[in-house]
Image 1 (cartoon, rainbow, N blue to C red):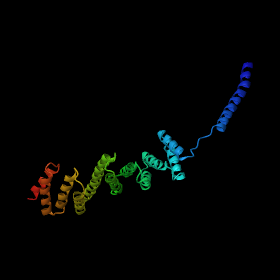
Image 2 (spheres, helix red, strand yellow):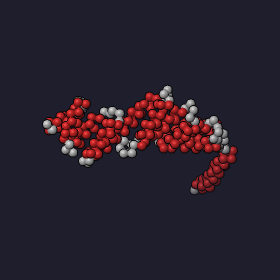
Image 3 (cartoon, rainbow, N blue to C red):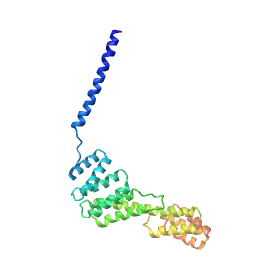
Image 4 (cartoon, rainbow, N blue to C red):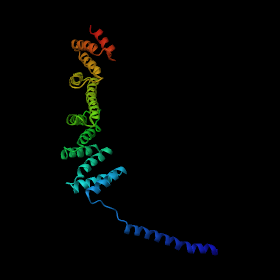
Length: 258
């Protein structure tokens, strides 16, 4: 019982002393340690780059924005603006990224990295493409952006990528028209379907699914009971797409229309 009382009496003061000592240590650290706040464009840029490497995107954007706003005439401003745009792009904030890339293009048209800004501005639109949407503004803007890069910077390191992306944009734009036409076809709006399929074949670069559009134009005329036109279209189809998966159906239609 005496031993128990001894520990009960003496441990509590020791705990209290430990807590007080810890608090004093924290206080002393806060008194003698001061956060370094960048106060020059060079320091802001360096700290922003460090933040990016540490995956601290919010801090990086804050530092770059401060540099851009507080030091508009500094030589570091152009790099900060480009890095700010890339920071938004890296976290899929594509509209914000596009805005800052465009701002860079407007302010620094002769910059050595101007082609990079053009490429990633177009990529910001490319990333927002939606094939199933009838609104293909982002796809069209992306294509225009890549074409601008090709026209303005024929020796750019991004040239081959831009050409590939244009092909993808053309595919998506054409595929979207096909899907809209097929929707009209499925719902029995054959005249609207014909209009869409014709605009696809006449107004877009050739795609692997053009045979389907050509066949469905003939089918739409058949369902509209425009048999003379349908027969001509089926014949044209068999000549132009001899290996199409729709060939057998086209030949059966021709047999029916004899």
